[in-house]
Image 1: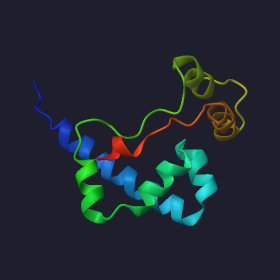
Image 2: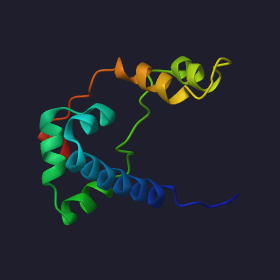
Image 3: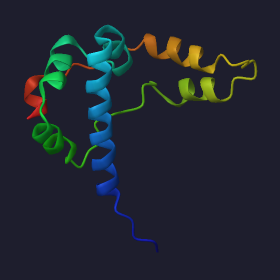
Image 4: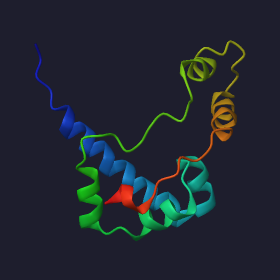
Length: 110
């Protein structure tokens, strides 16, 4: 059996996600909030985090990012669309646009 370090992979992904989120928020806050499905308070908090705080937050054993689809059926609609003529990104954006932002309080980020 192959021994892998999933915790290390999760932490690396978390840090990359947090850094990307900060960059997106600094470049275009409204678009980033839409893409990340976050509210104003969470956006403010993410932008305000320093390197040490980002690293500490990334070290959690849970993924901070998540699939933007509500279930397998929405994912299947994007992946298995027989009419796809380069429109899968647009279709995915439409499906995900209907999802509400997941509220996250400041207490969740400690």
